[in-house]
Length: 180
Length: 80
Figure 1: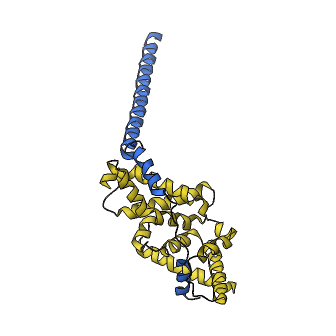
Figure 2: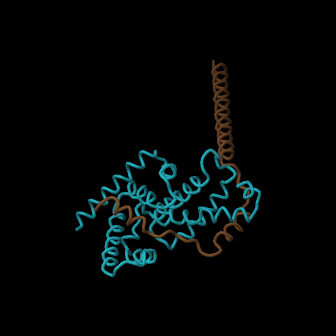
């Protein structure tokens, strides 16, 4: 961080490499539209580099970076006039295609169809959740984000986030059960 | 549907992968960024300037009001 502040390009590159994947994932999950993720990730890192000199070292750098990513995503949703994203609703098939590549190969065709349907319904139900519940749950299922980090990102307590995640899962389960 | 399955289904969503050269490109931009003023200092300067201006305005109004009162008194004395 010191080297980055001193204008060391290699250090800045390392910082971006460290956090880019999670920054982009946070933004993608928050807005649900991959087309603008790269632009918003760039905006996030611009804000990071501009504010690095004023970073409060009492918290973790990663938490600060992910909080900025979250705010950039929310700013984007606000600017677009939609606090709730619509992309999962609009194109669940796109999402299913992306998920396809991550699945383990030893899955039968029948299981795959069932799982595809399950993922599609999951995304539809998730997109209908109020943002208050959707975002904590969405962030909680990102590998590498722990509850204290999510709490800092959302400006909530760890207990509060856990409650929201639990309620979100319950709402999601109810929505999926009712849909059957 | 059990919570574990909901969790699993959500965790199966892919992570974003930065395009090739993203880090290098961002680092190149970062080292060219102009130094930004401290937002706290900027806010303090703006607040101080605002207080100075409003203080000056209040002071001028008080002065004008005082002189007006004196002129009225003087005019009243002359009128007698």
